[in-house]
Length: 254
Image (cartoon, rainbow, N blue to C red; front, side, top):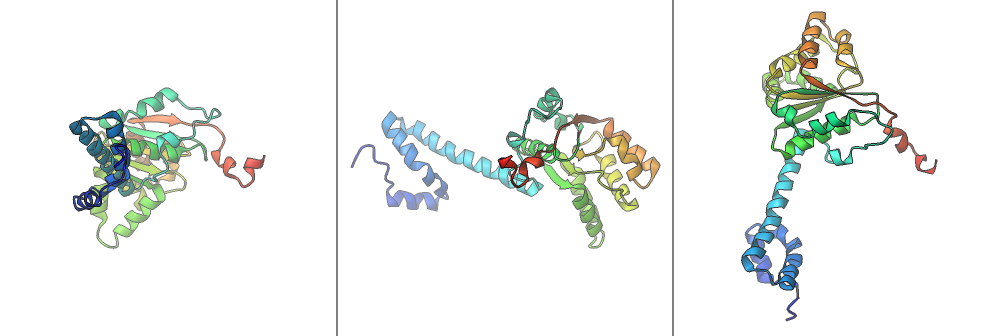
């Protein structure tokens, strides 16, 4: 046999599959070639091979947790379009990516006009939190209120509220697009009050928190919600043109 051959013995393939190590078969030829070319010590080679599997399983677990958290797989920090025409506090964003704000139970309010990437950035921070082993739940404001409304019909409201209040990071996208009903306002208040100084939130909005006041059903409740949230939140304001204009059909021909 050629000493640099990377063919795999069928019995080895069978044994690896029996041990649920079948995914290693994708990288095994490369690792075998490396071992023969570099005359690797068997123990060192085995460590490299098993390290591949450990990393694959870690990444798979992260993807699964992110999916269960409700985050889009493509909306990661690396994909966020740092276009030169966008204006934002880069130092603050760098600070937020460390996830210390979650450890310190602070909030983040990502504000800006439509199309500047608020949702992508919120999801990206959520992915960064999942990678660090934090519990995350991501939803839009409308989807959250719809789920809460439905939960009252099947008697699961308390269970849902516990889930929304217990995760380390709750991401609510597009809050403030419309006025909230009395019930929705109370639900939002319960979430903000319960999470105050205990757990973090990321909220994206086209409006700054002070502009949420007339959208809630009760003025005093609204003031209490905004006061607790805004005085414990980092404000990341993004300004610039919508990236969606680049997605307009024919834009690449302009």
